[in-house]
Amino acid sequence: QVQLVESGGGLVQAGGSLRLSCAASGRAFSRYAMGWFRQAPGKEREFVAAISWSGGTTYYTDSVKGRFTISRDNAKNTLYLQMNSLKSEDTAVYYCAARVVPTYNSGRYYSTEYEYDYWGQGTEVTVSS
Image (cartoon, rainbow, N blue to C red; front, side):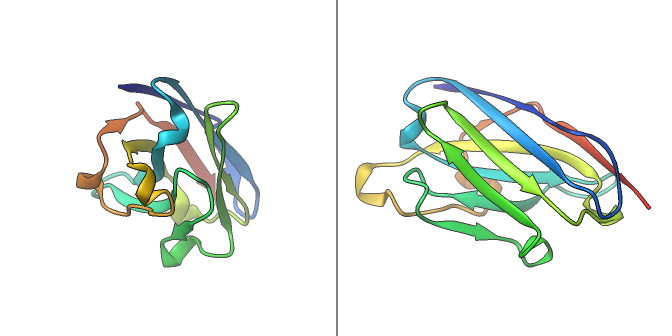
């Protein structure tokens, strides 16, 4: 089992940047594929970005491609989401998620909620226009 704690959210002006972090504790972080999701007010939670446990494969939803970068530091048990050129529509609560992956799937990522086993409590991002 793994525990996830997000941080780094806040209020930023449109065009600005934020870096979210997700600290993991518990079992070996490097064996987990990770993802970021977000939920805007009044909307369902949606996929943002995913990364394989090896870190070699990443995947993004179209609306954040070229602006957001997902990365991980397995030595620090931490997942990141660098968000640049923020827009008002990026306003949401951001969640990190994890699922254990067998070694033969080291390059796989996951982009749907039901594929993840563990979730953080979320960190709020507000982008003012």
